Image (cartoon, rainbow, N blue to C red; front, side, top):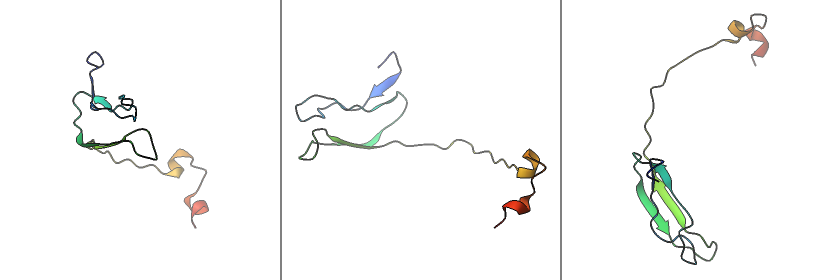
Length: 81
């Protein structure tokens, strides 16, 4: 994981037989919150892994385009309902 600059966040058994089969791998700098590993139950032999990843929005750039600028022979009124 170190060579790939990633982190594995699950450090306990996730399978009914005791192995860690389910992984949560993120870039090293990514923080995970509220990691909850519920044990396997009657419906599944794997654990349920719940977590939150804080996301940051990048800068949004507004753009616009009109159909007539792409295809001048098409008028807007043809597509109005």
